[in-house]
Image (cartoon, rainbow, N blue to C red; front, side, top):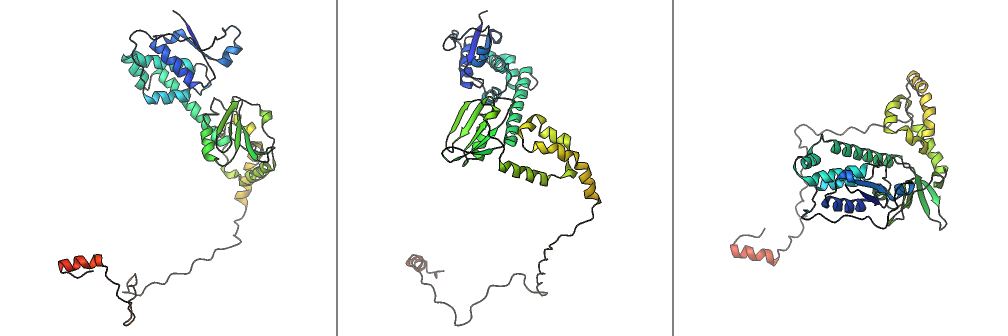
Length: 328
């Protein structure tokens, strides 16, 4: 069995994977005969053969039918390719191959919720979505004044998967009028107010240091902390500790958690406080007399004060003359 080695341009090269997978399926190349990798992986592999130009794709088999897949499978693969597992390419091609074979295998790959490949694919997509949600919540921008005098808000984040560029749309919609840049080890995304620019990964030292605004944020966080509502287990579930080293407020969590029980006890033992300012209650509304209408009738004009009768237009008078009825 002839083996085929496909080298993609980058870890999220969806167009390259789609082109190669379509050609391989139409050439009847089984999944076990295809090796998938990225250029970065090939450069680190000492025993890998250097790719010569583009991938040498086999010609379609005689009489190969057109390949058609449901749109939800395409949408699934567009998110699945963002996962960091190197086996994601083989999984996507295996599902595609099974769909193209027809019969029971195709039905299972398309619709069976207990199919092993489908379950693994959906599990990986959920992990990608969860990582994107955490990025929405845990990105912290710091303002930096550039040489031209404009302010650029920069943030450093360490995602679990290749989501930086794919997740930039959320920040464009959220901060459309703000110029910002998000640096990650895999890729960087920068918004100049009109266009999104993607670049290679960065290092944590490229991110700006803390500023005065961050100190103000820590003061605010310390004051809104409620020791009586502290639930460390739930907090660590929603804000995993692996994100703490990039969150300014995480430096206060240990201190606030250690003193939470003592502060809660003092709050219980303290006497009730009286507000310094009382809001005066509104005056009572006057009740209508018995038998009086709830809604007063509109005032009537006094005799002799009626205004002049509005003139009747010719468009209104003509139908009235024709029918013999008075115009309204």
